[in-house]
Image (cartoon, rainbow, N blue to C red; front, side, top):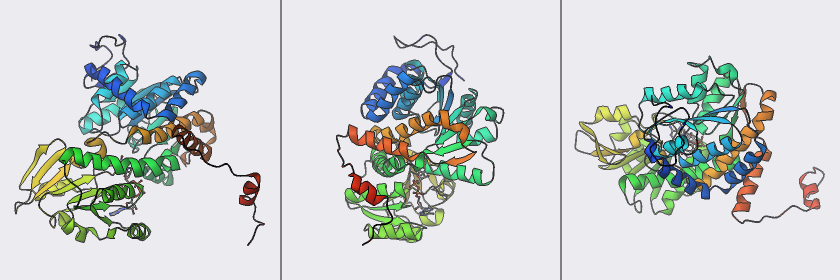
Length: 436
Ligand SMILES: NC(=O)c1ccc[n+]([C@@H]2O[C@H](COP(=O)([O-])OP(=O)(O)OC[C@H]3O[C@@H](n4cnc5c(N)ncnc54)[C@H](O)[C@@H]3O)[C@@H](O)[C@H]2O)c1
């Protein structure tokens, strides 16, 4: 693994670099330019960073983060460092790592980083292991792999951890299971569950970036096509509404009757996957569940069907099942697009190897939406520096004040004014005495 002895090549790079394993340090200047571009669309996080630089809430704190190594995450790391933290970042997904961002974090911002695009499973876990060598006080996770490793392979540093933050739906579900079994040893805050995260990041971020990824990978025209969206949670709603806006006929599949009803009343056709498989041109899974598209479904699909997953793990499409059915492939026909040929000659296209397509084949969410998610993360981490000791091991909510503060700051930066309730309105809303 590359270590601190490596000499930077770009002109003004620091000579003493933090611990790292990244693909190519010569990409640092390009990475810095992209991180600064994202920063322009992150005014809330920028304000938080400026305040952190003055108040230094993390002085003396060690923070390990396992997140997508993107320009937006880089700006979160900058905020934590400005606040005085010693930070290490490793990737939460092997395909989402932007190698130039990773290089810039190390060489331009002095953040210890372990991330290489396309690294194999062993390398992925070696990076988590290296990050945990920091013996962190606080952990930031996206999908629960870091917290899982702490409770299994790295119990030697588990006792140092005071608290953590979790970024995504799937991670929160895993953490709640750990907590229910009494396995979770420290408090973790479900940042995903704030309104300013899931209502915008999951919905508008995943909605836009998932389609962006499908376009980049295939350049397909959605107008007039049938797009099957599996799962009508926050992410699925975003994907379905964006696809509809582009002229696609959208079919939704669900297992929850309430969500199916919601989709039906939003004007979408609801089918079980066994029927949707035969009519779809593009399939997008966003369920957080496994085996949503299986060989029996693929068997029914049209020639040229496109399969993409935007759920957290690469388990939503049965990739091994697809490979077993194929007589040829996978053959890379375009970047992030692998073609499998079935026995009767039909071709099935799998994007980003079935991993999070918006991060594997595009750049993830737009920075403007991550501005809120990562302001939530930064402010929650600041709150934890005083609150961690008062929280029992388990999964906790972000305080509502933080959620509301992020929303207020965001609308302020967007130039949006809202009304302030009058004293009579406040009294009315808080009283049970009023009747008809
Ligand atoms: N791509 C991204 O950048 C990104 C961003 C946020 C969240 N995520 C991930 O996306 C996934 C969904 O997140 P969410 O916030 O929408 O979750 P959610 O819980 O709001 O929605 C998931 C929906 O999928 C449905 N579902 C479960 N199994 C199904 C099946 N077999 N067939 C059809 N529907 C099924 C559920 O009933 C639910 O309505 C999670 O894995 C989450 O971690 C990805």
